[in-house]
Image (tube, rainbow, N blue to C red; front, side, top):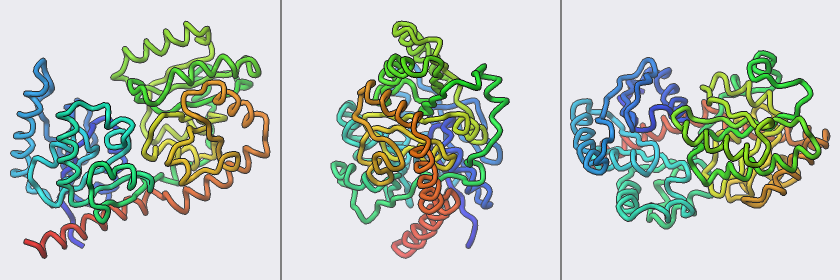
Length: 378
């Protein structure tokens, strides 16, 4: 098969996008990338194309950038344009007029819980983006029904998990250096919240912080680690203030999010991972924790029904319920047999259903199929 020229449009600091791009770069394809918004960070081996940063009149700048994207596409002449997120970056991909156009939806960009909160213009543009896509990738089966309100033909929707590199994400790693860096005692129960988009209210970080009050009654030395995007310093301070108000600052560490090669050490360090949003696609952090054999507490959502059985390979709780979250953490911490049951089942599921190389190969095959179909219809 000939090598492709692929133009990705997406968040230039998102590890999930970097992971996808890296696969195609390693496969020898020519990769072009438009980061939105513009960033100084550069990933090696790909060609960057910069847009103007948003200024005071951001909506006007968005319109200007749409024309800039069209110019970039006309110059690069990619085989495929692949936008990551239906909102924002998806608009650029749809309005550049190129086909095949692949739209990657991750959850909050399209699911009703968050979509209904968007302004009218965002809704209209997102609807347009979805209907311009030649193929739309979603990360879980539940999203096929979840995006029915967007009018996307079901036959163009592809369910492809984001995938986990099983050679990197595994158990048994030496976490002593990380423990020393974070100054965490060997005896502490460690809870990890890996969702680093701390500006997003749907992830219920306030619920996690409040739950510490109840957990520390049983485990006084418990440490909750919250990862965060370094661009969200103001939101970080808000969480620190909240922890202080609840009197749990000593049990709460907010730590800079790290790249994929370092994340396995956080999962290995943790005794339990918590992910308790009010809505979600299929978060890769859940798959990574599964691969690293870390037990989990999760909100009972549509996506969890595809993967988890309550009390078997995770504990599922109602949303925004700090006492239930605390009870679940304590239950797992006390029950060694439950921990082992969760660990065994989750690792095998990831190996079977979410191997990174297989998932990325599915996207590559989709590119070739779209191109063949596009050539036939021209």
